[in-house]
Image (tube, rainbow, N blue to C red; front, side, top):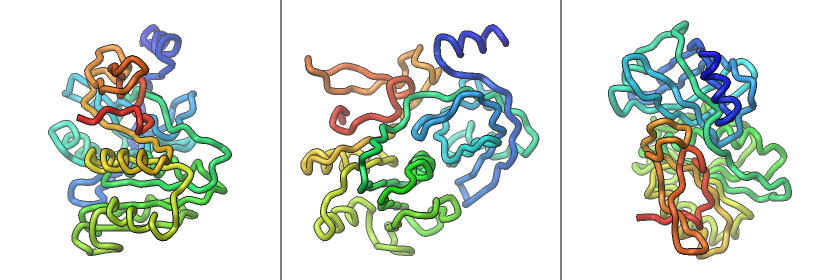
Length: 265
């Protein structure tokens, strides 16, 4: 194992640690908050992720970072299959094998003042960590879900102006967060930059929106991953290049991409 860790550290700039579960709490019927020990030496950047080995499953699973401090790493996840179902049943004290930090994080310009952060569903997780790092900035945080039960207020940092939307109108504006955002920009003008995470339909619409209005936008993407280290090329997406297009790996080249380079299919 020490040799494997050496390879990760030298070649892949990652670490592999065995971390105990500190907390694995149900927030809502399908959503959980997992907090594990932070035994990593390397710092985690907003937008990066970890790969967790779930016992009895061969491949590790990727999880976005929601919060990180010197003692713990927190992820917000939704039960969508047998792997996450098994994870949701694990109790504090259980040891998990964790690989990280994986991928590249958000590009943060210190001179940027007016920031819009747009999150939908569990895609809001990496944006929470990003917001905590963007201190002394003017931030408007757009947060949309299907209904009020899926808005996890306890995770949101203090400071930004929050704008909420639910599909059923149970909290905040009624409608999608994208439809609300379009109305607000007409009244308040455009921001200096947009950071976004959420379902593909939201990312795609926001990509077109930001391009038309010439607003720099960065998006964190999700994809099925095999290794999480850029070796298997199982999570590639198409991106624009000077010659036309090429493939990039979500796990290694991303998961954060500039919206204008993504080719949506």
